[in-house]
Image (cartoon, rainbow, N blue to C red; front, side, top):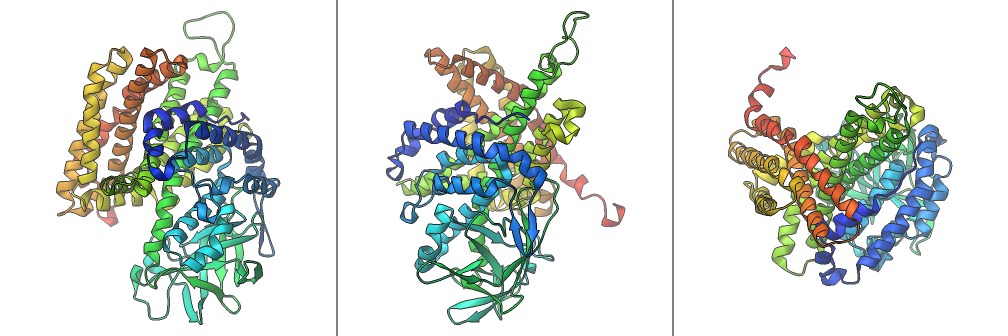
Length: 597
């Protein structure tokens, strides 16, 4: 097994030179964040990822979790690592300062999250869900609820979960049957929830569940769902822990991957009913839960970036050490490591180029999120809110779908050894597979994109982004670097195809939303592919300017330009095919009757 090393140079490049840290620190709420602070945070985070989390990734996968009389036991070393994680203050990195957090912007927290996920995704899922609970309570919790739950959640002493899914209610939450019966200042919760990540464990003192349930007389469908806080242990008025609540883990799932992360079936109300506290108003639970889900969708997209990076590093190190065959054209002499073989170089560079494009897109979305929260200008606030809403399904869908392909390429580079568990390449593919399903499948993300984000908006935000992409063409035309200039043709073709497909979606959606839904996933992938090319082209221009200025790190900048050219020549051509699929392919998707399948 290779060891994880955070790609700090590329992370800093994207934050400072591509996304623009200066624009974030110029906002009054983020004025205390400096480049030196960012460097220090990333450096320390990389050490924790490499020294504490990464060594537990393989052992945790092999050992898995255990369920003993309703209690879930994490793999060996996880509890101690979590205690170190909390003690070091990592859980509260971007948490609200009034509840003990450090208040750092998302554009700083995102690369730290990437490191955690690269080093040990199963571990990282626990604090990731806690951050979503915090976001929901910050926006919709009462002052009393915030005071009672947010400090401990921010520190990580307590962890959090979201409880949506039931045996009969997966993505269709209108079928939720869990009940909430009023009783004084609280409710009694009854029902069963499945697929609850880290729903029970021994790492934190308490687990705070956000649970969707129906109150008596609530309307049918999604309009009758409310949101409740249900703690594993009841909390006394002084903040101390009281008795165990009536919520229990009755089983854990046996999964394809992320074996060290418990996926629980939880029952509520086997005895007297689990005590729950209403968040906000009755019947607005789905609206509130989407605050948490949107936060989680961006984080899951980042998981795609992280696992792609880890799979790339693992394949790269194997390719540098695995001796096999002679160099092409050599009939004698020493055998060489497989990184000398052109097709292995192609596969490695495809992994590297796509991962860097995905990272750039995820960090761009996080910067827009910061501006939507902190920008003092109301118009800029609204523009960035629209942008982050638009980008979230693309980051979630495209980065995770690409990650599965990248991890699969990593197995291919290992050859037959990649299919053997002992080499470790298979774990990244197994772990990656869930990311396209978590928090809404790729199809759900794509329907959200073509419906709420393009169709209902009549393409307003999409057209604005395409306009920014077109402005880059003139800059590429002025480049004196042959590699940068070579990217221009395919980039322009990709943007033209994206514009054509977007116009088709805008024109078709009002009359035939089913046709648009039939090609929504290709449209989402088209957006990711083109946006990745846009950001890689921008990165190449930045790198060219740094080289022209004689800046240090010349090897990095030259590699960035070469990688951007590879993306333009090997990845961007897919955009034309995807555009054609969107504009022309809906009819064939819907051609067969159900009986003909």
